[in-house]
Amino acid sequence: MAERHFFQQGIDGASLSGLLLIGVLSASCGETREMDQRQVAPVEILRAPAVGNDEERFQQLRADTLKLMIEAAKRELEIGPFQRQIDVTVTQSLTDMKGAADALEKVATGLEDLLSQ
Image 1 (tube, rainbow, N blue to C red):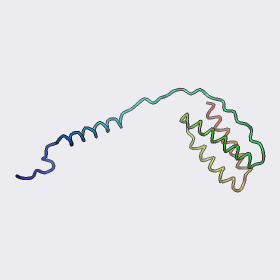
Image 2: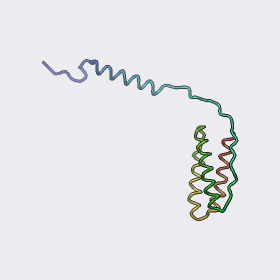
Image 3: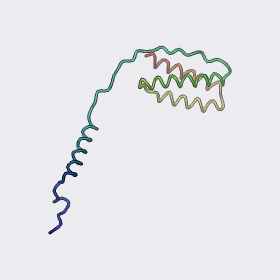
Image 4: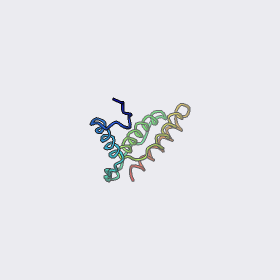
């Protein structure tokens, strides 16, 4: 009995099931779904003023910006630029704590503005 080449072989049950599975997965991956677009009311986030020496202010502002970033992420807002600014302030704090604290204050204010929209 001569061997049949791959192209000449019939499709058996397992191969057919595999092809159907691939077809279903391909269709579902390309499927467009309506996202949950619930409206989130602006929430005023009250931050206590950062007080103390420059290092204490910086640490308090780091905690505040973290909370604000978490809230912004929950709302699926664009936080990438804020994260980059925070990274810069961390590096700046190694040589200029006062400047870093002042810059972080601006980041926190920007996040509050974003969340209040």
